[in-house]
Length: 439
Image (cartoon, rainbow, N blue to C red; front, side, top):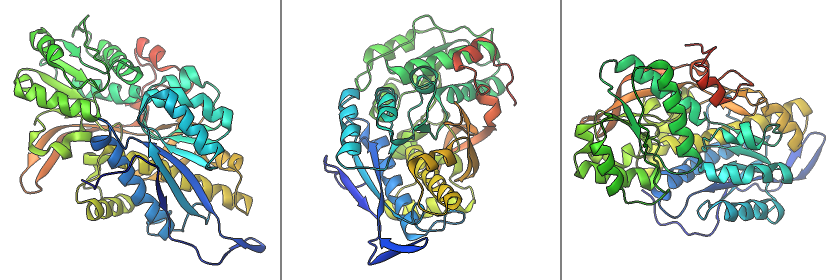
Protein backbone atom coordinates (compact mmCIF):
# COMPACT_ATOMS: atom_id res chain seq x y z
CA UNK A 1 0.00 0.00 0.00
CA UNK A 2 2.36 2.72 1.20
CA UNK A 3 5.75 2.82 2.82
CA UNK A 4 6.05 2.65 6.59
CA UNK A 5 4.70 5.67 8.45
CA UNK A 6 6.51 7.35 11.30
CA UNK A 7 4.43 7.67 14.45
CA UNK A 8 5.38 11.30 14.70
CA UNK A 9 3.17 13.95 13.18
CA UNK A 10 3.14 13.93 9.40
CA UNK A 11 3.10 17.43 7.99
CA UNK A 12 1.61 17.79 4.55
CA UNK A 13 2.30 21.26 3.28
CA UNK A 14 0.90 22.63 0.06
CA UNK A 15 2.93 24.17 -2.70
CA UNK A 16 5.10 26.90 -1.16
CA UNK A 17 3.93 30.41 -1.78
CA UNK A 18 6.72 32.82 -2.62
CA UNK A 19 6.49 36.50 -1.90
CA UNK A 20 3.23 38.14 -0.98
CA UNK A 21 -0.43 37.34 -1.46
CA UNK A 22 -2.77 40.11 -2.51
CA UNK A 23 -5.62 40.41 -0.03
CA UNK A 24 -8.52 42.82 -0.63
CA UNK A 25 -7.19 46.38 -0.50
CA UNK A 26 -3.60 45.65 0.42
CA UNK A 27 -0.85 43.08 0.33
CA UNK A 28 0.08 40.80 3.19
CA UNK A 29 2.54 38.00 3.70
CA UNK A 30 1.23 34.66 2.51
CA UNK A 31 -0.37 32.54 5.22
CA UNK A 32 -1.67 29.02 5.48
CA UNK A 33 -4.77 27.45 6.95
CA UNK A 34 -3.49 24.84 9.40
CA UNK A 35 -5.70 21.77 9.79
CA UNK A 36 -5.17 19.12 12.47
CA UNK A 37 -6.12 15.71 11.09
CA UNK A 38 -6.25 12.68 13.38
CA UNK A 39 -6.29 9.23 11.77
CA UNK A 40 -4.93 5.84 12.78
CA UNK A 41 -1.30 5.65 11.67
CA UNK A 42 -0.43 2.70 13.93
CA UNK A 43 -2.23 -0.32 15.32
CA UNK A 44 -4.94 -2.61 14.00
CA UNK A 45 -7.05 0.24 12.60
CA UNK A 46 -4.26 1.68 10.44
CA UNK A 47 -3.80 -0.56 7.36
CA UNK A 48 -7.42 -0.85 6.21
CA UNK A 49 -8.77 2.45 7.53
CA UNK A 50 -6.29 4.97 8.90
CA UNK A 51 -3.76 4.92 6.05
CA UNK A 52 -6.38 5.09 3.25
CA UNK A 53 -7.86 8.05 5.13
CA UNK A 54 -4.42 9.70 5.26
CA UNK A 55 -3.98 9.05 1.54
CA UNK A 56 -7.32 10.69 0.82
CA UNK A 57 -6.20 13.77 2.76
CA UNK A 58 -2.87 13.96 0.95
CA UNK A 59 -4.57 13.79 -2.41
CA UNK A 60 -7.41 16.21 -1.77
CA UNK A 61 -5.06 18.78 -0.16
CA UNK A 62 -2.76 18.55 -3.17
CA UNK A 63 -5.73 19.10 -5.44
CA UNK A 64 -7.01 22.04 -3.40
CA UNK A 65 -3.63 23.76 -3.08
CA UNK A 66 -2.77 23.35 -6.77
CA UNK A 67 -6.23 24.22 -8.07
CA UNK A 68 -6.49 20.78 -9.70
CA UNK A 69 -10.06 20.00 -8.70
CA UNK A 70 -12.96 20.48 -11.10
CA UNK A 71 -15.42 23.33 -10.55
CA UNK A 72 -16.68 24.58 -8.19
CA UNK A 73 -13.51 23.68 -6.27
CA UNK A 74 -11.04 24.78 -8.94
CA UNK A 75 -9.68 27.81 -7.07
CA UNK A 76 -6.54 27.35 -4.98
CA UNK A 77 -6.58 26.84 -1.24
CA UNK A 78 -9.13 27.64 1.44
CA UNK A 79 -10.30 31.18 0.66
CA UNK A 80 -7.08 31.69 -1.28
CA UNK A 81 -4.70 30.46 1.41
CA UNK A 82 -2.70 27.25 1.09
CA UNK A 83 -3.74 24.35 3.31
CA UNK A 84 -1.28 22.75 5.71
CA UNK A 85 -2.53 19.40 7.06
CA UNK A 86 -0.97 18.24 10.31
CA UNK A 87 -1.76 14.53 10.22
CA UNK A 88 -1.34 12.80 13.59
CA UNK A 89 -2.00 9.39 15.11
CA UNK A 90 -5.46 8.67 16.51
CA UNK A 91 -4.30 5.50 18.29
CA UNK A 92 -4.17 5.40 22.07
CA UNK A 93 -7.73 5.99 23.24
CA UNK A 94 -9.92 8.91 24.23
CA UNK A 95 -7.79 10.37 27.01
CA UNK A 96 -4.76 10.57 24.74
CA UNK A 97 -6.80 12.12 21.95
CA UNK A 98 -8.08 14.84 24.26
CA UNK A 99 -4.45 15.74 24.98
CA UNK A 100 -3.53 15.54 21.28
CA UNK A 101 -6.35 17.86 20.24
CA UNK A 102 -5.54 20.34 22.98
CA UNK A 103 -1.89 20.39 21.85
CA UNK A 104 -2.83 20.90 18.21
CA UNK A 105 -5.01 23.88 19.09
CA UNK A 106 -2.97 25.51 21.84
CA UNK A 107 0.61 24.70 20.75
CA UNK A 108 0.43 24.18 16.99
CA UNK A 109 -2.27 26.83 16.56
CA UNK A 110 -4.37 24.89 14.06
CA UNK A 111 -7.31 26.73 12.57
CA UNK A 112 -9.53 23.63 12.47
CA UNK A 113 -9.69 19.89 13.04
CA UNK A 114 -10.81 17.70 10.13
CA UNK A 115 -10.82 13.98 10.72
CA UNK A 116 -11.52 11.38 13.46
CA UNK A 117 -12.36 7.76 12.76
CA UNK A 118 -13.42 6.20 16.04
CA UNK A 119 -16.75 6.92 17.70
CA UNK A 120 -14.86 6.71 20.98
CA UNK A 121 -12.59 9.56 19.92
CA UNK A 122 -15.53 11.69 18.81
CA UNK A 123 -17.32 11.06 22.09
CA UNK A 124 -14.20 11.98 24.06
CA UNK A 125 -13.37 15.18 22.17
CA UNK A 126 -16.64 16.80 21.11
CA UNK A 127 -17.00 18.80 24.33
CA UNK A 128 -13.35 19.85 24.07
CA UNK A 129 -13.89 21.21 20.56
CA UNK A 130 -16.61 23.46 21.91
CA UNK A 131 -14.48 24.46 24.89
CA UNK A 132 -11.51 25.35 22.67
CA UNK A 133 -13.79 27.02 20.12
CA UNK A 134 -12.08 25.18 17.28
CA UNK A 135 -13.98 24.32 14.12
CA UNK A 136 -14.12 20.50 14.08
CA UNK A 137 -15.37 18.48 11.12
CA UNK A 138 -15.77 14.86 12.17
CA UNK A 139 -15.37 12.66 9.11
CA UNK A 140 -16.12 9.04 10.06
CA UNK A 141 -17.31 8.27 13.61
CA UNK A 142 -20.93 7.15 13.44
CA UNK A 143 -22.42 7.17 16.92
CA UNK A 144 -25.57 9.26 17.19
CA UNK A 145 -24.60 10.14 20.75
CA UNK A 146 -22.36 12.99 19.54
CA UNK A 147 -25.28 15.32 18.81
CA UNK A 148 -28.17 13.55 20.52
CA UNK A 149 -26.57 13.25 23.96
CA UNK A 150 -23.12 14.85 24.23
CA UNK A 151 -23.50 18.03 22.21
CA UNK A 152 -27.17 18.93 21.80
CA UNK A 153 -26.50 22.57 20.94
CA UNK A 154 -23.42 22.40 18.70
CA UNK A 155 -21.60 25.42 17.36
CA UNK A 156 -18.04 24.36 16.49
CA UNK A 157 -18.58 20.63 15.80
CA UNK A 158 -19.87 19.25 12.48
CA UNK A 159 -20.02 15.74 11.02
CA UNK A 160 -19.82 15.15 7.27
CA UNK A 161 -20.96 11.53 7.09
CA UNK A 162 -24.18 9.64 7.83
CA UNK A 163 -24.65 8.19 11.31
CA UNK A 164 -24.94 4.56 12.33
CA UNK A 165 -28.71 5.00 12.09
CA UNK A 166 -28.74 5.72 8.36
CA UNK A 167 -26.18 2.95 7.80
CA UNK A 168 -28.27 0.31 9.53
CA UNK A 169 -31.71 1.44 8.43
CA UNK A 170 -30.59 1.24 4.82
CA UNK A 171 -29.16 -2.23 5.48
CA UNK A 172 -32.48 -3.36 6.91
CA UNK A 173 -34.38 -1.84 3.99
CA UNK A 174 -32.14 -3.65 1.53
CA UNK A 175 -32.71 -6.96 3.28
CA UNK A 176 -36.47 -6.39 3.42
CA UNK A 177 -36.53 -5.62 -0.31
CA UNK A 178 -34.19 -8.36 -1.50
CA UNK A 179 -34.34 -11.24 0.96
CA UNK A 180 -37.96 -11.89 1.89
CA UNK A 181 -38.40 -15.53 2.82
CA UNK A 182 -34.65 -16.11 3.14
CA UNK A 183 -34.06 -14.66 6.60
CA UNK A 184 -34.97 -16.95 9.49
CA UNK A 185 -33.62 -14.75 12.24
CA UNK A 186 -30.88 -12.20 12.92
CA UNK A 187 -27.85 -12.33 15.14
CA UNK A 188 -24.81 -10.10 15.35
CA UNK A 189 -21.17 -9.62 16.22
CA UNK A 190 -20.17 -6.02 16.91
CA UNK A 191 -17.36 -4.30 18.80
CA UNK A 192 -18.20 -3.49 22.39
CA UNK A 193 -18.22 0.32 22.30
CA UNK A 194 -20.50 3.10 21.05
CA UNK A 195 -20.26 2.32 17.32
CA UNK A 196 -20.90 -1.40 17.71
CA UNK A 197 -23.64 -1.02 20.30
CA UNK A 198 -25.46 1.70 18.34
CA UNK A 199 -25.16 -0.24 15.08
CA UNK A 200 -26.75 -3.40 16.49
CA UNK A 201 -29.50 -1.43 18.23
CA UNK A 202 -30.41 0.49 15.09
CA UNK A 203 -30.34 -2.58 12.85
CA UNK A 204 -32.43 -4.63 15.28
CA UNK A 205 -35.05 -1.88 15.69
CA UNK A 206 -35.26 -1.23 11.94
CA UNK A 207 -35.70 -4.94 11.23
CA UNK A 208 -38.43 -5.14 13.87
CA UNK A 209 -40.43 -2.59 11.86
CA UNK A 210 -39.62 -3.81 8.35
CA UNK A 211 -39.64 -7.58 8.97
CA UNK A 212 -41.57 -8.09 12.23
CA UNK A 213 -41.79 -11.85 11.78
CA UNK A 214 -38.00 -12.19 11.83
CA UNK A 215 -36.74 -12.72 15.37
CA UNK A 216 -33.55 -11.23 16.78
CA UNK A 217 -31.19 -13.13 19.04
CA UNK A 218 -31.16 -12.33 22.73
CA UNK A 219 -27.44 -13.09 22.85
CA UNK A 220 -25.60 -10.90 20.31
CA UNK A 221 -21.80 -11.07 20.40
CA UNK A 222 -19.93 -7.98 21.67
CA UNK A 223 -16.18 -8.71 21.79
CA UNK A 224 -13.71 -6.05 22.88
CA UNK A 225 -12.58 -3.71 20.12
CA UNK A 226 -9.29 -4.75 18.46
CA UNK A 227 -9.25 -8.11 20.27
CA UNK A 228 -8.33 -9.85 17.01
CA UNK A 229 -9.31 -13.39 18.03
CA UNK A 230 -12.89 -14.55 17.53
CA UNK A 231 -12.88 -18.32 17.89
CA UNK A 232 -15.44 -18.34 20.70
CA UNK A 233 -17.74 -15.91 18.92
CA UNK A 234 -17.51 -17.79 15.61
CA UNK A 235 -18.48 -21.00 17.40
CA UNK A 236 -21.49 -19.25 18.92
CA UNK A 237 -22.55 -17.85 15.55
CA UNK A 238 -22.17 -21.28 13.96
CA UNK A 239 -24.51 -22.81 16.55
CA UNK A 240 -27.03 -19.97 16.42
CA UNK A 241 -30.43 -20.78 14.92
CA UNK A 242 -30.53 -17.33 13.32
CA UNK A 243 -29.20 -17.45 9.76
CA UNK A 244 -28.33 -13.78 9.10
CA UNK A 245 -25.32 -12.25 10.83
CA UNK A 246 -25.00 -8.48 11.22
CA UNK A 247 -21.61 -6.89 11.88
CA UNK A 248 -20.26 -3.34 11.99
CA UNK A 249 -16.68 -4.57 12.40
CA UNK A 250 -14.04 -2.43 10.71
CA UNK A 251 -10.27 -2.22 10.30
CA UNK A 252 -8.11 -5.06 11.56
CA UNK A 253 -11.01 -6.60 13.47
CA UNK A 254 -12.95 -7.07 10.26
CA UNK A 255 -9.98 -8.53 8.39
CA UNK A 256 -9.25 -10.94 11.25
CA UNK A 257 -12.89 -11.98 11.54
CA UNK A 258 -13.18 -12.63 7.81
CA UNK A 259 -10.02 -14.73 7.78
CA UNK A 260 -11.00 -16.80 10.81
CA UNK A 261 -14.62 -17.22 9.68
CA UNK A 262 -13.63 -18.22 6.15
CA UNK A 263 -11.32 -20.89 7.50
CA UNK A 264 -14.24 -22.41 9.39
CA UNK A 265 -16.73 -22.12 6.54
CA UNK A 266 -19.03 -19.65 8.30
CA UNK A 267 -19.72 -17.58 5.17
CA UNK A 268 -21.03 -20.69 3.44
CA UNK A 269 -23.48 -21.46 6.23
CA UNK A 270 -24.80 -17.99 7.11
CA UNK A 271 -25.99 -14.86 5.35
CA UNK A 272 -23.95 -11.77 6.19
CA UNK A 273 -24.50 -8.02 6.23
CA UNK A 274 -21.28 -6.10 6.90
CA UNK A 275 -22.25 -2.47 7.39
CA UNK A 276 -18.80 -1.09 6.53
CA UNK A 277 -17.46 -4.20 4.81
CA UNK A 278 -16.30 -2.31 1.74
CA UNK A 279 -13.39 -0.92 3.75
CA UNK A 280 -11.43 -4.18 3.45
CA UNK A 281 -12.83 -5.61 0.20
CA UNK A 282 -10.16 -4.08 -2.03
CA UNK A 283 -7.36 -5.06 0.36
CA UNK A 284 -8.45 -8.69 0.68
CA UNK A 285 -9.25 -9.15 -3.01
CA UNK A 286 -10.35 -12.73 -3.71
CA UNK A 287 -10.05 -13.52 0.01
CA UNK A 288 -13.09 -11.32 0.61
CA UNK A 289 -16.18 -13.55 0.39
CA UNK A 290 -18.54 -13.11 -2.53
CA UNK A 291 -22.27 -12.73 -2.10
CA UNK A 292 -21.90 -10.53 0.98
CA UNK A 293 -24.00 -7.42 1.55
CA UNK A 294 -21.59 -4.55 2.24
CA UNK A 295 -22.04 -0.89 3.09
CA UNK A 296 -19.96 2.30 2.98
CA UNK A 297 -22.20 4.69 4.98
CA UNK A 298 -23.00 6.68 1.87
CA UNK A 299 -21.95 7.12 -1.78
CA UNK A 300 -18.28 6.15 -1.48
CA UNK A 301 -15.65 3.64 -2.54
CA UNK A 302 -16.85 0.67 -4.57
CA UNK A 303 -20.30 2.22 -4.99
CA UNK A 304 -18.99 5.15 -6.99
CA UNK A 305 -15.97 3.55 -8.71
CA UNK A 306 -17.50 4.17 -12.13
CA UNK A 307 -19.47 7.33 -11.44
CA UNK A 308 -18.57 9.93 -14.12
CA UNK A 309 -19.10 13.03 -11.96
CA UNK A 310 -16.09 15.31 -12.56
CA UNK A 311 -14.87 15.47 -8.96
CA UNK A 312 -15.27 11.72 -8.51
CA UNK A 313 -13.57 10.94 -11.82
CA UNK A 314 -10.62 13.13 -10.77
CA UNK A 315 -10.39 11.45 -7.36
CA UNK A 316 -10.56 7.92 -8.77
CA UNK A 317 -7.95 8.59 -11.43
CA UNK A 318 -5.49 10.49 -9.26
CA UNK A 319 -5.82 8.16 -6.26
CA UNK A 320 -5.12 5.06 -8.33
CA UNK A 321 -2.17 6.83 -9.95
CA UNK A 322 -0.72 7.99 -6.63
CA UNK A 323 -1.25 4.87 -4.53
CA UNK A 324 -1.62 2.00 -6.97
CA UNK A 325 -5.02 0.93 -5.65
CA UNK A 326 -8.63 2.12 -5.71
CA UNK A 327 -9.91 4.56 -3.08
CA UNK A 328 -12.11 2.96 -0.44
CA UNK A 329 -14.62 4.40 2.01
CA UNK A 330 -12.20 6.16 4.43
CA UNK A 331 -10.30 7.87 1.61
CA UNK A 332 -13.53 9.41 0.37
CA UNK A 333 -14.86 10.30 3.80
CA UNK A 334 -11.77 12.21 4.88
CA UNK A 335 -11.59 13.94 1.51
CA UNK A 336 -15.26 14.90 1.84
CA UNK A 337 -14.49 16.59 5.16
CA UNK A 338 -11.88 18.73 3.37
CA UNK A 339 -14.34 19.57 0.59
CA UNK A 340 -16.73 20.78 3.29
CA UNK A 341 -13.93 22.91 4.70
CA UNK A 342 -13.09 24.42 1.32
CA UNK A 343 -16.73 25.15 0.58
CA UNK A 344 -17.22 26.87 3.94
CA UNK A 345 -14.02 28.95 3.79
CA UNK A 346 -14.61 30.02 0.17
CA UNK A 347 -18.27 30.83 0.76
CA UNK A 348 -17.54 32.79 3.93
CA UNK A 349 -14.76 34.76 2.21
CA UNK A 350 -17.06 35.64 -0.66
CA UNK A 351 -19.70 36.93 1.74
CA UNK A 352 -17.21 38.82 3.92
CA UNK A 353 -15.14 40.24 1.09
CA UNK A 354 -11.96 39.18 2.91
CA UNK A 355 -10.43 36.15 4.58
CA UNK A 356 -13.12 34.92 7.00
CA UNK A 357 -13.15 34.42 10.74
CA UNK A 358 -13.92 31.01 12.24
CA UNK A 359 -17.39 32.25 13.14
CA UNK A 360 -18.04 33.26 9.52
CA UNK A 361 -16.84 29.86 8.28
CA UNK A 362 -19.16 28.14 10.76
CA UNK A 363 -22.08 30.26 9.58
CA UNK A 364 -21.42 29.20 5.97
CA UNK A 365 -21.25 25.50 6.83
CA UNK A 366 -24.28 25.38 9.13
CA UNK A 367 -27.22 23.93 7.20
CA UNK A 368 -25.30 24.18 3.94
CA UNK A 369 -25.77 22.17 0.77
CA UNK A 370 -22.46 21.71 -1.03
CA UNK A 371 -21.12 19.61 -3.92
CA UNK A 372 -19.34 16.40 -3.04
CA UNK A 373 -18.09 13.52 -5.16
CA UNK A 374 -21.35 12.33 -6.72
CA UNK A 375 -23.75 15.20 -6.19
CA UNK A 376 -24.81 17.62 -3.51
CA UNK A 377 -24.93 16.77 0.17
CA UNK A 378 -26.72 18.69 2.92
CA UNK A 379 -26.01 19.49 6.56
CA UNK A 380 -29.59 18.59 7.34
CA UNK A 381 -29.78 17.37 10.95
CA UNK A 382 -28.71 18.48 14.43
CA UNK A 383 -29.29 22.17 13.83
CA UNK A 384 -27.43 22.07 10.53
CA UNK A 385 -24.32 20.32 11.88
CA UNK A 386 -25.00 16.71 10.79
CA UNK A 387 -24.86 15.73 7.13
CA UNK A 388 -27.43 13.57 5.36
CA UNK A 389 -26.58 11.68 2.18
CA UNK A 390 -28.03 8.78 0.27
CA UNK A 391 -26.96 5.30 1.36
CA UNK A 392 -26.13 2.40 -0.93
CA UNK A 393 -26.25 -1.36 -0.67
CA UNK A 394 -25.30 -4.22 -2.94
CA UNK A 395 -23.69 -7.66 -3.01
CA UNK A 396 -20.01 -8.44 -3.62
CA UNK A 397 -18.80 -10.28 -6.72
CA UNK A 398 -15.31 -10.72 -8.14
CA UNK A 399 -14.64 -9.10 -11.51
CA UNK A 400 -11.91 -11.00 -13.38
CA UNK A 401 -11.54 -8.29 -16.00
CA UNK A 402 -10.92 -5.53 -13.44
CA UNK A 403 -9.09 -7.79 -11.04
CA UNK A 404 -11.01 -6.40 -8.09
CA UNK A 405 -14.18 -6.84 -6.10
CA UNK A 406 -17.25 -5.04 -7.45
CA UNK A 407 -20.90 -4.79 -6.48
CA UNK A 408 -24.07 -5.97 -8.14
CA UNK A 409 -27.79 -5.58 -7.45
CA UNK A 410 -27.19 -2.11 -6.00
CA UNK A 411 -30.02 -0.10 -4.43
CA UNK A 412 -29.72 3.61 -3.57
CA UNK A 413 -31.76 4.87 -0.62
CA UNK A 414 -32.36 8.65 -0.49
CA UNK A 415 -31.48 10.61 2.66
CA UNK A 416 -35.08 11.03 3.79
CA UNK A 417 -35.59 7.27 3.67
CA UNK A 418 -32.87 6.35 6.14
CA UNK A 419 -32.50 9.36 8.45
CA UNK A 420 -34.91 10.56 11.14
CA UNK A 421 -36.65 13.91 10.65
CA UNK A 422 -34.67 16.87 11.93
CA UNK A 423 -35.07 17.24 15.69
CA UNK A 424 -36.14 13.62 16.30
CA UNK A 425 -33.78 11.29 18.18
CA UNK A 426 -32.72 8.24 16.22
CA UNK A 427 -33.79 5.67 18.81
CA UNK A 428 -37.20 7.33 19.25
CA UNK A 429 -37.72 7.37 15.48
CA UNK A 430 -36.80 3.71 15.16
CA UNK A 431 -38.94 2.62 18.10
CA UNK A 432 -41.85 4.58 16.62
CA UNK A 433 -41.71 2.70 13.35
CA UNK A 434 -39.64 5.25 11.34
CA UNK A 435 -42.59 7.58 10.79
CA UNK A 436 -42.06 10.27 8.19
CA UNK A 437 -39.52 8.29 6.16
CA UNK A 438 -39.54 9.32 2.52
CA UNK A 439 -38.52 6.36 0.39
